[in-house]
Image (tube, rainbow, N blue to C red; front, side, top):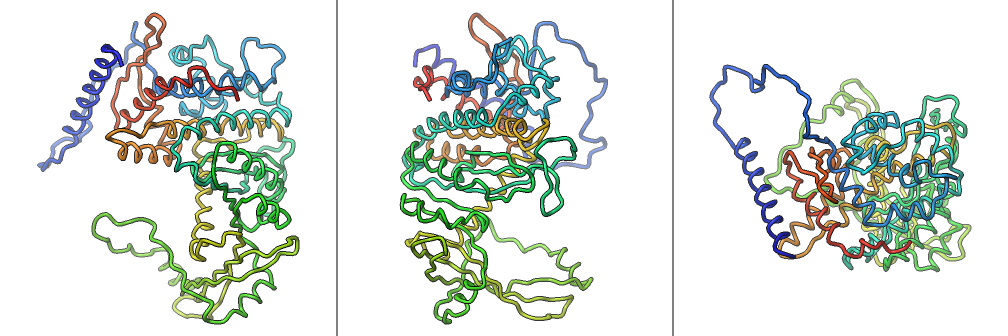
Length: 524
């Protein structure tokens, strides 16, 4: 590092420390006396138009664009995706990133593009004379054929492999791949490919295959609303396995609920060295086998605490919901105990037997203060993992529920599962482009360095950013007010306000600048 860069870094650190000290001073503990006036005392407020100084609210969008360029995503999209016959004036990468950046900047729908395309500073931030308006963005989505969406997903995944390969060796020990279906509802009536499901919901039924390690969506496939959740999952699992092995993962684990068992594929996955844990239906023959087990086969199921209490344990709050259920005499199911056992079983479509782990839940059916009767219910999991304990299998299977958090983030956080266009394929294309906003968030976290004397602290910050919800990430690391100044050949973003995540943000930007490998992106 030359002298000027060292001085610049020291100056930046000094400013960060001063800004943090000032806000900590304002938020210090004070023994307040009763106040005569409210805390909000601002008055005589006036607004004026700035002459030369220009600012942008989501100043972190420049870091997201730097990330897309350094990873080679921009070049890869333009080289592999050919949807436009003539580039007048936009390229494919302009359209794809325009939709992703809209969500990262705080937009929620295509119509919000109109706000950004009329923001001169936002355009300068991206070095663009203009960006596509909402109508043009919708037209771009409608140009997609199914094969084009596949190309776009594979292009993003090729770049994803490069990001994974930059992680520590421990990251590549095991890839955990989850699969689930999710309903994308719509109130529209003229969207081709929409249908009604068994719950009476109209819309589409996308399939989501994700990497549980980082909560990244690997494959997002749009389907008609009446399709079963597991349809096409085996093919996407196979593609995800190949993707993870190409990245260098030593082991691969597949997980899914009862709809994703698909016993006809288990032998092939086992032969390929792939582990799996799937829920399986409580069929009469399985229930009979579980009931025939002796008492010695059953052991208490011990579940780990959700978190470690760092201070003194607090009393549990009163369960208001349960009190109302009892008071009004509603039927209530109370869990008395859980036990776990295991046995071998060969599904009808398999040539070999696998390990079945069964959980027996002992329930009490109550109405008001009266216990009506006891009930026993069985939950089955099929796996080829012989080394993990039965309780560990149940715990891993239950951890798949974390994918529900990813689905929630894609739905209400990134708004990637909206269906703003008019047919199944065009909405599929929008979902993939919009989910890229969440992917860029994950990549930014993964590329945060964690070495040196602060390795432990940096590792904790990296994990925290990776687990952040989309709205929290946008507010902490993208909605960073900046003054945008063009000096010579540089585009300078001057941070105008401080927040507790600013040092992490700047460390991530520094990492993107110093990764020499990214300056000439590897071909995908």
